[in-house]
Length: 114
Image 1 (cartoon, rainbow, N blue to C red):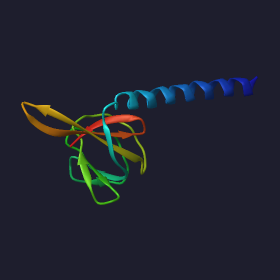
Image 2 (cartoon, one colour):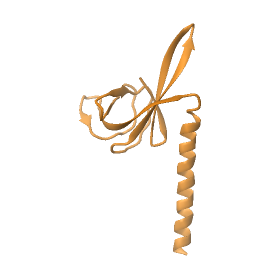
Image 3 (cartoon, rainbow, N blue to C red):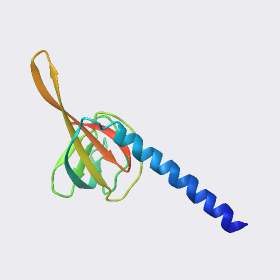
Image 4 (cartoon, rainbow, N blue to C red):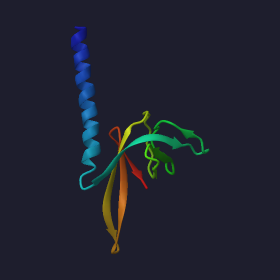
């Protein structure tokens, strides 16, 4: 009986994770994958650097292992140590001016970045 219950829980957790993953990628239709990077750390509002990923806050700097960084323009919380970030871009036109909008997917969560 315990094996049956454990099996059912694994199926439910797997289906839930897959649904989250599909949702992040469904939002990505029309976007271009620019690169993948390993997140190394982020900077707190007080300037302290922490070696982990704790999601985004507007204005938070997220540093990658290749010595580059992005700035969050949306918020969302999660905790992960050295997760892979998938950086996406999309060209948008406004009044004849074309620019790129950026997004970052980390563990199936999408964040707006600059």
